[in-house]
Image (cartoon, rainbow, N blue to C red; front, side, top):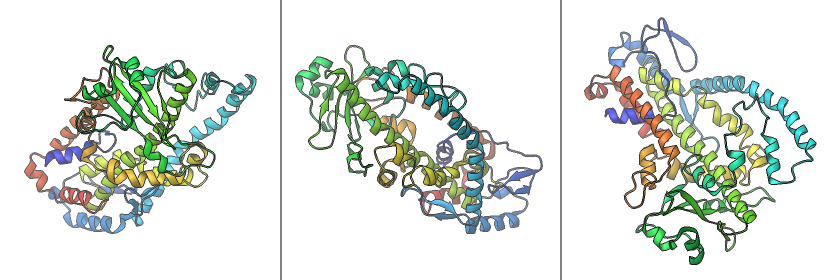
Length: 437
């Protein structure tokens, strides 16, 4: 029972310590101050009648409304829900205002630098957009090495294990079929092994974005809907790209043995698909999942419950994202339609496809379980990945979350029996596992 609570707590994005006691007041989620000395479990609350009235009020006025930005989890509505959402949007806009102002101010010198250089005529000219620019809007600048190493195959493959590790998986020698075939001579030149040998040895990985071919696109733009092979090199142990296949028509297969510009084009087409996947999976896998867990808490817990306080603190400004995104990101003619191949309609199609199958299932997306299920961690049928930066960095964060959540729960609950005696906690777990979808 304790583990169920810990996982629900630790997986809700990021944790920040919330004091067990506040001197005179606590804040409800809608911002109203309520007199109290401590956050208290319901069975120890000295004023159970007032608490019961608050719970009835919460259940009536925090309601599940239609999903936003695609058919994923319910979005918060009701009298209290609307108040919270509007407050979050106002706070978000206040924080976003100076960033927007900096972007507007710094766009003019960026354009001037491009015009002074005669425009963007070659690939390397895109560095004019970034080098020495956006010092206020993006003071940290571009990540070191990106502008100098972007053509390297090792960087391309390692992006799969750092920027967006969720599409890539290792092909199981017995359970998985090869999605496409690459000429034997080419594979041997690149790897010293055949494609079948790489597969049998558990050295072959795939990232498949072919599903994007069925999503609506902006007229005049081309969606390659790529599938890519990567392999663990038998000599160096590095993860390297082997081939990229496009989906439209009969499909073209590109490899590192092609002309440099053709191979670079293939990697760019794949990255366009991968960027779309990463952005919208984040919406469905992080925002939609965390919100619905918290919405269940709003409907079943008093604002003076310590677990509710913990979650309220984590979810600061969270309810601004989907409404603002609906207004400026995935609205017709919005930022997605302006900048991506897949249209805003395609965004909603992706969310509807991925939320119930890939992004929404809770326990299947625990970090270690997800990585292990895809053969990226503790793999029993192939060699260990020499470098696994997302797993290493995110693993440290998850371990810290779990340690904090363990300490937090132990501070309020002396045993599993105490947890089972907490009616609000049990109601939250039941709600989150049932009505909250």
